[in-house]
Length: 148
Image (tube, rainbow, N blue to C red; front, side):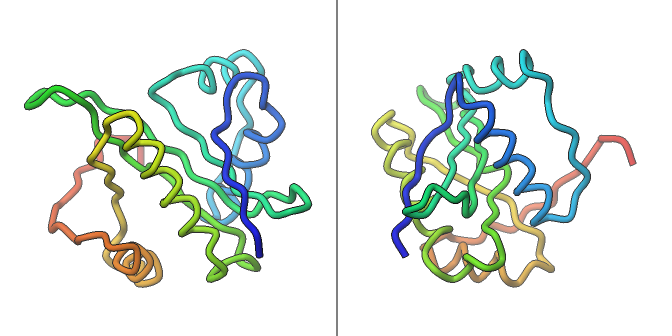
């Protein structure tokens, strides 16, 4: 399968909405589409990355969202992958690899060397995927101060 990865920007509301719905569907999470103006503002931000993976026909297969974070201990930024998901029917066909590889290439072109992602310790599929891509696991404990 041939996979095309693109970074979404202003004017790509429909694809962004479809991508965000796909992420919620794959993770079985609730989803409320953003209003047009809020979506346009998000897609226009240089520190927000939304990558969409599609096949030769243009069908959306998966995608990821990431946030560029300025560093304080050195000049430069790191890129935090917040969400990455591939439709179940398209998993294990190189879609996730294409997404992460493309993200890392584009990040390097902007002098971003550090790319990181959190994975739940119970999510063996995600842990195996990140290890297969050459990721190194780092033991951390994350605290959440959000709503229950």
